[in-house]
Each structure stands twice: as C-alpha cells, then as structure tokens.
Length: 497
Image (cartoon, rainbow, N blue to C red):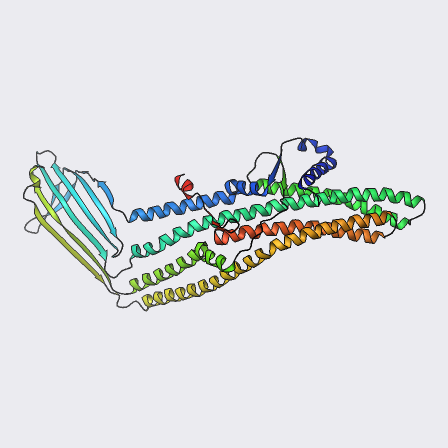
C-alpha cells in the first residue's frame, strides 16, 4: 500500500508535470491539512459555525430578557408640562365657562414593578410627588403619594406569564442542544469537503500512475510489434489507452482544483494557498451500544426539546382560544396614602387613606360561533401536533438505530476495503508482469487496472463514510463514545461577546 507521504509527493509531481505554464501557482504557499485540522478550522471559521454562534447568542439574550421580565423592575418617571391655553370648566351650578389656563405642572415618580407569573397579574409599589404652579401668581400646590400599592390582572383570561414559564426554558435548552448538534454537523460537512479533495487527489494519483504505466507499456509494445510478436490491433489498443490516460490526468487535475476551492471557501481561507489533505489509514475501533446511544439521543438531541416545545405551544394556543371565547374579567386594585398642601414638607403630614377598585366584565352573547370555532381549530391543531410529533419521534428513533448500526459495521468495511485495495494492487503487479512476459492478454491487464483503481477509490469512499457516520452519531447523542465522555462546548465564551 502506498504511504501518505508518497501520495502527497505524487500529487505535487503531477501538478508540476501537467501545468508547466502555470508554475507560478505551485510556487506559492502550500498547506497540508489533516482531517482534525480541517474540522477545527471549520468549527471556528466556516459560515455554518458563525451562523450557529449568532443563532445561539440571539437565543441566549432572548432567554435573558425572559428571565429579566420575572424580576422586579425599578423605574423613575417624570411628565412635566406647561399649559397656557383656554379651556372650558364646569362650574358649581352646572354651567360651563371658558377659563384661561396658565400653569406649570412637574412631577416625579419612583416605582417598583413585579410580574406575578402564577396569577398573571402585575404588582407595583410607587411613590409620587407633584407640584402645580399658577403663573402670574404665587400660588403653588403640592400633591404627594408617598406609598401607593397597585395590582391588576385578568381573572379568567389567558395567562401568558405562566405559559412563558413553561415554554422559554425549553426553547433555551433547545438552542443549547441545537448549537452542539450544529457543531458536530459542521464537522461532518467539513469531513465531506476533506474527503472530496482526498478522493480527487486519489483520482489524480491513479490517473498519473496509469498514464506512466500506459506510456511504458506502449513503448514496450512498439518493440514487440517491430519484431512481430503482437498485432497492430493490440498496439493501437495500447496507444488508445495511453491517450485516454493523458485525458484522465487533465480531468483529475480539474477535479482537484475544484475540490480544493470548495474546501478553501468552507474554511474561509482567503489567501491563495495550495491545499493538500492527508488521510489517516486507521480509524478508531469501538462499538456503540444501541440502547445507550438511544438514551443519550433522547436526552441530548434538540429535536426532542423541539417536539416538547411544539406540544406546549399547542396547549398554550388552546388555552388562549378558550380564554377569548368565554367570560372576560379584569380587576384593578389601588390603595395608598396621599395628601395635598401648599408646602412640600407639610404635605407629608396627616396623610389620608385612598382606595380604588375597578372590575370590568365582558361576556359574548352572540358571536355566531366564532369563539367556539376558534377553540375547535386550536384543539384540532393540538391533536395534529401530537400526531406529527409522535410520528417524528418514531422517525427519530429509527434514524438513531440506522446510524448506530451502520457505524458499528463501517469500521469493518474500512478494513475490508483496505485489504481489497492491497490485493487488487498485488493482482495488477502480477498481471502486468505476465503481460510483459507475453503470458496474458491486454484484456486481462485492463481488467486488473480497473479493479485496482476501483478498490483504491472504494477505500477512500469507505473512510469518508466512516467519518461522516462518526460525526453524525456525535451530533445525535452529544457524546464521545471513542473516549466515553460527554461533549462540552464553551457556551460562556459566546455569551460574553
């Protein structure tokens, strides 16, 4: 079997051999990457990784806003105004008189507000001071409310605070797990680009090897033709093979360039560097227990949180429809201490009790079935969501089972492909020697070449499949079965930025 270093040197030799007019391209910087290096760069610089970080950051701050809405809020407010206008005033006898207004009002209010999630109401404690100055006179009046308690809520309405308390934590857990899954899917995508280039390099190596062999055989056949040991037809067949291999080399070089451009773009490499990848011929040997993988997938996969959130949101929509279809009642309570005076300091003396209670009721009498219809729509949507989520759960479990079974077999397939490649290479060497000695036909030789090339490509393909399954399994379970440890991600670094 060829070594990795031989493959790299051979690929570089092909570039120099094929593109003498573009030698400046090969004289630039060259960079050789392993699969681990490509994945590390992709999880930092790729467009998918950048989008995943921004998506998680948005979800994090949305969750922070939700948490903040459940904490006490302190606010300072003021609404001063100048009024120099003519307005009508109702007199004591019921008549109306237009009076010139000429005053300045200033106020300052400090309030603490707290949402009460289990009732859906809002509680507020405030302290307010107001001053009214009549311009053109020395009249000044103060009104103070040193302590005022206010509470308002809907009695039979939709409690958005309660439902947010159920939905938002699930949404945030989903975002965290989604970020972890995306990072592993980025690794899987990076491995696809990596092996796309590795496959192109393999095809280029095969094409160059076959071209050199075809050229040697053609020159050897010329000698045999001149002494009459082979026919002209066989010589022409070898010449056609030689020309085909030259065309294959050109096509393989184009494929290498395209694959390198795709990898460079995904890794966000803006410098014009020649990329070469090196594959590792060995893969980790371990089996994944299906039951353990299934339990970890159910615990750690974002799809599970998504299904849970969809069900809760369906229940929330049904509760909202029911609340809007029936009796609506709102209550507003206000009590505190207040006083009025001509002096601010004395306005706080002999404080008076104040109470205010307001209840509003609304009951639909005739809505032509609109409210009932909305409830039925919401209930039907909830049943549809439950059905879809049950089906999605079944598909999710089947996908986990399929990935685990394929992965547990893939290491064996890599080993078989490796041994097949070595055997096919040995058969080619034997067939070539037999043909040179005149003991086999050109058909036998071409068959050996085809099997050798196919086995080499199949080996690289089996490596690509192994690593795709490897990172897909990690994305499903958020677990490193190779080292028997959960995967960890630096969420705090994203949250700080």
